Length: 154
Image 1 (cartoon, rainbow, N blue to C red):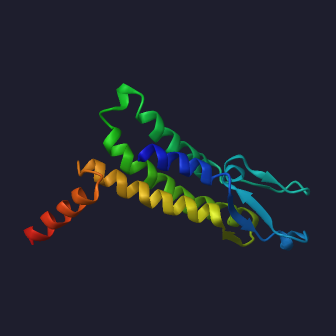
Image 2 (cartoon, rainbow, N blue to C red):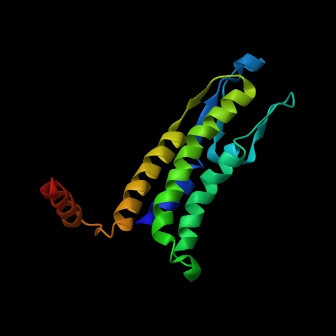
Image 3 (cartoon, rainbow, N blue to C red):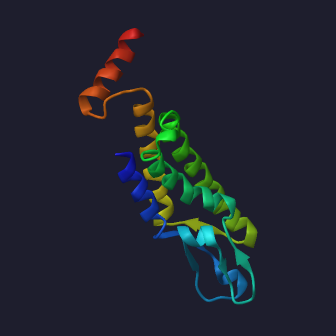
């Protein structure tokens, strides 16, 4: 499940991440940036350069690290913790990267489809990571049993 969500996160970076209001720089239309543009940066014709920098790198490396965790035996002891923390780091980096782009240009940047896909998938990954960290089966019955057990204690 975690691998499928990680691949979906990487694919969401190919869609439009944010739209920058470039009319403030004299351009007639807005600039659409994909998730990989956030990582690699984008340059206007006047030489102005925008990039999400380090936070864009975290957005790309977090899902890749989760896929690698499944195949590297040395990471097996921290795998459960990383299934929860890596998507959380990617989620936080998503918020910051959009703000870095907007503040770097002193223009407004609005979130787009890729941004919201990344957020939704990251939240799903955090939930799945938490369930796996708590050793809860990834089935409807396993989750219901966990919820019932927690409510009975109160």
